[in-house]
Length: 570
Image (cartoon, rainbow, N blue to C red; front, side):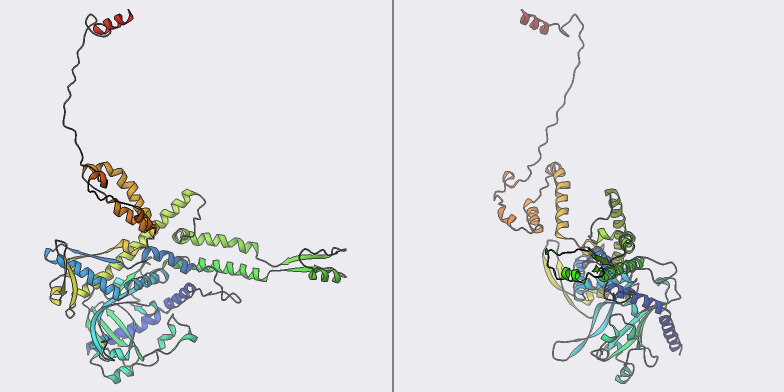
């Protein structure tokens, strides 16, 4: 009885908090419309014009620095007996990330953080009903899955001052009835109970991905449920939004220490769960710039050139209109003139570059980030803007890397606690050979995930063009190899020029360089260009003896030197 009372109170709390954060969902809808190019706030006939889509421009430029590619996991350990398994765990985790399209979901994760804040990614291990490939047969499979959580479905404890203090966090999930039936998570439910919770989803009207006139019926009948992580009890609870207040699923959470939800925030707000998105800082400037540009375009559309004719000159005006280019026309009274009416207002037009500069300044030098050109009038100001933009990017990269590392930790944790599936993974030996073996639940159970060092290759997440790689290769060759060549010769270090030349030809997309380069077959240092062994001079000792001689002795200009000079003069 106590458990039922507690569950009911949690359900009431979720419903009240859901109504309390309706303002956040409206703000998300406004930003989303601006991102897709909807001219929010502009009056007709300019409702289809968005001259500057600053939201998409800003988000595109930052994604190149934050989440351009899927990260590569790096797993190590100090326990000697487990070191042979770390490579297998890396390969298995990378396989799961590829199967779950982690690279694409990571970009959506970062994009949500840039637009709305926070970006939410769910990493969990659940039973899924999947087809077996034999006709219409299905089977329940326990697997790790990742999904982006839409902020319009997210709910949290509004009485908390941060996510760490929340009594619960959760979101709405939509489960097809076909997936519920046969799922071990819901095997205690009968089909009548499941269908009784299905029907029209009243919350679908607040979804952001479809306009009302474009909405269509789902392919399969679904049940909309709340999935909540009760942080106080550390339990996952699922119950339907419609129908009787009955908990369908309740189990202890034994996954990642931070729960199933992983967040990215770039601007924290004191004493509040939801932070500010970077685009919130420039949203009003983008809208103001679009208003000024749209008004200027509208004034340009209304501009026209007309002919003004004085009284009694209709014949001359008709002759001018019928004349071709270059044809002479008689005009005696000179009462015909061309007038320009309308056109862009100069004061409105002057506001456009001001708003553009403000957008660039407040956005952290967007011109430089998006490759739109340098806006600074001097080199010193340009360098200061680049340094400021670099500092902002590094801070956002650190936030992104921390969140992605937490998601990778959750994947590793789920794979280690999998006591059902057996995977075939490669194992590398000390001599460099590799063989394939089964990674069984017993092998996973012997490894303690706490003693694993889980990290990510941060350079794998960033976009690097062939031009950037070529520049870094040449900087390494000219800035390190050439100055260090004498020291490298002394220590017996050799550089493979053939490999460097092959990479150079690949980066500049000219394979002809490899065909035109001929390498001698001899292995001698003279033929291969390898440095000779360093020769060290023998150790010697020099002794300097100084003798002072007086004026009467053979010193100075006296003695044999003086006699030779005298004989030469004679």
